[in-house]
Image (cartoon, rainbow, N blue to C red; front, side, top):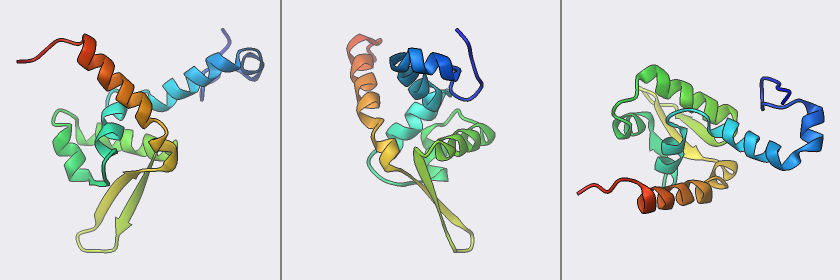
Length: 119
């Protein structure tokens, strides 16, 4: 399989295998250990950076910042900075990000059904 850096496939492969490209594009947008959980956490409402950090207790500040920047660059979340001192920043899903929620909900259901049970 031929590769390019951004989405994983060269143009010719995309033309020949459009269905596979769709899967690869989605996987590329969600690649990263924490992105699924960040999107799931933003599902009901916008969140501040500190709320996301508290939710993902084991994530480093650098990793969280990187994941948030990638999600924003891919158009899945938006970042709103309020002109206050100290500055307040809130993250929320974009309409494109909201389109991924049914996939994440299915992942949640699959995990509940087949994952280890906790008492």
